[in-house]
Image 1 (tube, one colour):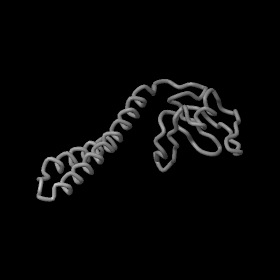
Image 2: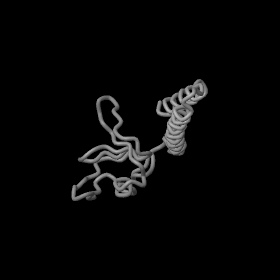
Image 3: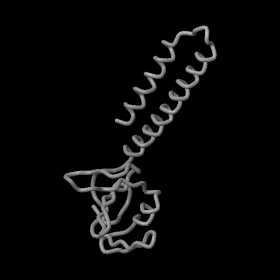
Length: 133
């Protein structure tokens, strides 16, 4: 979805740039083209970031399970449920919220290698791992 939106915005900016005709006010034309190029560049950056997330997600193993938290694990704690894959914010499945986190994030680093029953503290907040799937 994010990739499609960025690509559509890029296409629209390029179309607007191509359709813009140079008038007697040359500076206005050049300013408009520069603004459209900036918008295209911004959307290309977003598309590139979305592609990186897609590649990272494709590398996450979804087969099998582990008793210890690792990339691809779902970790249920007493203070939230975390899917270790990529940083994607809150995911809602069957009215339950899960935080999609990067394994390199502060909480991802804390969770790595933990198993059910383990405890950790992050930002002075205690957590207990209830289950690793």
